[in-house]
Image (cartoon, rainbow, N blue to C red; front, side):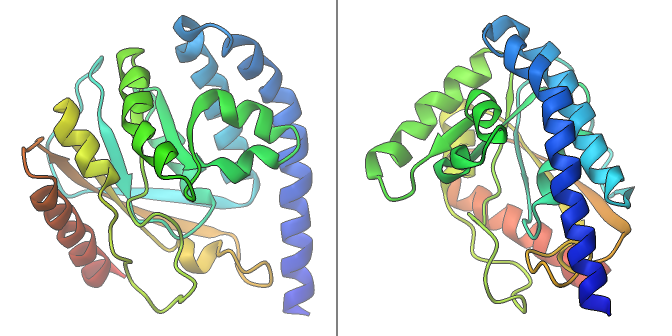
Length: 241
C-alpha cells in the first residue's frame, strides 16, 4: 500500500510540474530572450520553485552556522551536497536577491516544455565531450558578467550507492572560483535523500534541514578550496544527520 501511495505522490509531481511549467514557463521564456531581463525571469523561476517544493508537501528549516552575509549585487559560486531533484528548487528558494544559473547536464534539454526553458537559463554540459567541459568556464564567466551567480553541485550527480554520505567532489566549482576570483557560498542539505529520493517508490512529505555554512574566500589553489568545502559539508552531515 505504501508503494502505491508513493507512486500516486510522484504522479502528482508530474501533474504539478506540467501545469506550473506552463503557467510560469511562458514569462520565463519570453523574458529570457533578453539578457538584461533575466533578473525578472528569475522571479518567475522562484515562483515555479516554490510551487514545486511546497506543492509536494515539503518544507525547509534554515540553521545558520556562520555570520557571514552575502553582498547584494555580488556574484558567487554556490555549492551544496546533492541528493535529490528538489535540491534545484530549494536552491532557488534560498537565493531571492542573487539570480542564479545552474550548470547542468545537456540531456535535460530533451524533457518536453521544461527543456526549452532549461537551455535558456542554464549552462549546459555534455559530459562525454572534453570540449564542452572545457568551455563551461567561459560560459559561466559570461553569465556572471550578466549578474548571475553560478550553482554547481560539486559531486557531479547523485551517487547510485545511497550509503555514501558525500561523494568525491569534482574540480569545476573550485576552478571557476579561482579563475574569476569569486567567493564560494556553501550550504548543506539534510533530509532530502530520504524525503525525496530518486527512487520513485520511496519518499514522503516532510521538512528539510538546511545549514548555511558560510562563504569561502577565493584562492589561487582550487585543490585547497575543494578540500575545505568537502570537509565543511561532510562534518555538517556527520554532526546533524
